Image: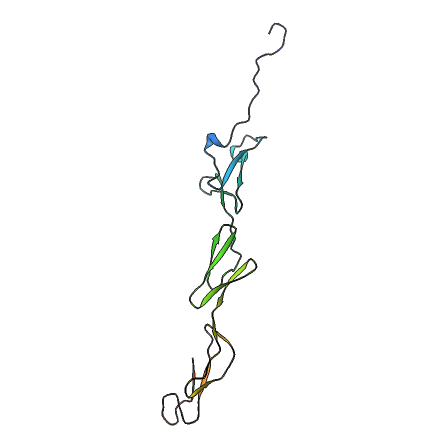
Amino acid sequence: QANGKFTGYQECQNIDDCAPFGIDCGTHGSCEDLPNPTGNHDDDYKCHCEDGYEEMTDKVTGKRYCGNTPDCPPNACQPGTCRDLVNDYTCVCPSGFHEEKSGRKRDCVRNVCGKPQSRTHSRPASKDEMVFEDTVQFSCVSGFSVDGTAGAAKELTV
């Protein structure tokens, strides 16, 4: 201008590092363009994630997204497997086991079978409560054997 002042000068604007680049952080979050950019696109935005999700980086594309926070603790659910949920997990237990929860901890525990009962002409060696995969020894009463012959075994394990 004739008076020596600049007029009509437009300020530089922060580049939106979210929408124009297709960054949406996935279905469980939203993209925030950072107010003080570094000039490196990957450092100039962050993802705000819903509860149970955390910001993760895709190893192939390098883009950030909101992924499910892993909730399975180390060695959880043995001898079964841990299935991750949102803010929780559940155990997939093999046959003979069931999931048991104590506070936030879960594990696969053996099914309780109960106390062994006396059978016709045999008695259990233990009256304790048994669980899946336990064995108990039974003894035949006098005058009986496992196969019904004299001198045969009088004890069997089940």
